[in-house]
Length: 571
Image (tube, rainbow, N blue to C red):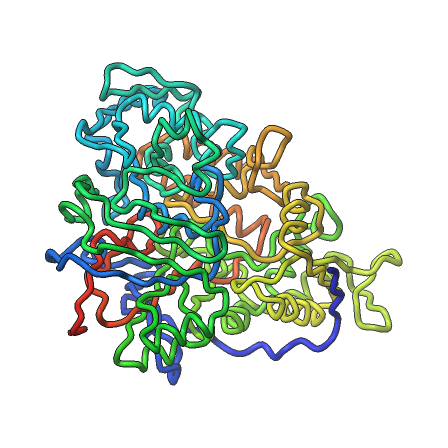
């Protein structure tokens, strides 16, 4: 299906949030909600340490009924980049490492590790008491098999393979000691191994029955999969004998819940109404349009978190295609888009508008560049005038050398980026004389064209990771897709200075050097504008008051169900 939309954009509303320095984040007056969790200080966002660890033991027993908006379509976490893996993976699997409350690396299945002076050899000392639910041991061989599965071309991994791309091979030193060899120093290596997409799967299943991972994976995590029906849901039961949760969480022993029943519910109103009626207990995709009602309901609780690294993008430019091969056109577009309005259309006051390239809670985030691309239609028009696009045709669109300033926006319908967003962008850009035609296509077609860079400008998208190296994943020239690489630099953006600093950041672990390098990277992105950030990447949860013990995963800021328990009285 192809939709060309040129007329009739909805009104773009005013400011989303009023943000003060060093105070809890609040929404605009009169919105009736408490805004996102966390504290802003000098433009950076932080969370209370107690959000990430269990304050006291919970009560065992009970079934938690959870809803989510979409299915991952496979449970092989190595083979996908779906956002649900951030919390779903923690139900079934464990990781080698875990981040602490400050984002530092801490033990999980690895007890300790050493890094060689040249940064190319990592020696991991593993726990000797961990088993997968099929009885297989977690040991050095299991780690080696998992790393090979992540990068195996047959896995077709768009994420895990890219995150361990510098990994060459490994050596089993003894049963519980593994030596990983990298082709070059790669400072994010430990961080990415703490992410849910790089979880550990039973080596027996990987080697003997890899096709079964998609629908019935075997992990070492706190729950075991009982059943999975694609696009409907999944049931999980407590893993008996589980006793190796990350030390940072302060949880000891098995999960408290007996069962966890997950339902796939695409319709936002149904997720809200079933929660309100007590037919479900928890939704990991709280509908923004119902946020006020959730907060006003004394039986419900709402939490709003922000993922680290890359904010949500309204547009990504193909810098090899007209007219976005001109940085001045990209700059004018970035300044003509009303981010507060777009955040309101999707978030109903829940989303924090964003104009720079790192999430405000990411290590080495520098707020100095947050206003460089601020909304300014007059300035956008001036930029285009100076770029030689001063003439306009009878329809009000700019022309130069008898060619209209026009482009097609490739997008698909999704809750995070509904077609109303594309239409609002279309209206914003018409004000500066840029004609946008909207190509609304099925996701499969959009994905195919995205990886082939077959577009002028593409809508929507976020790429979460737990390190500022997310900038490398999206904008380094080595992240452009090739016949052998599924890359995330869809716009084929190349900038020698940005490549230099992002590559240098991978070569060092020195905090002062990293701070300086990532500052340059953020400044360079604000100058070169390969994409237009629009708002932070939000995690919105809602649950009934009977749900207790909720803590958040340190890498993803998503719920960690190991510590959740149910209080029938809901006190």
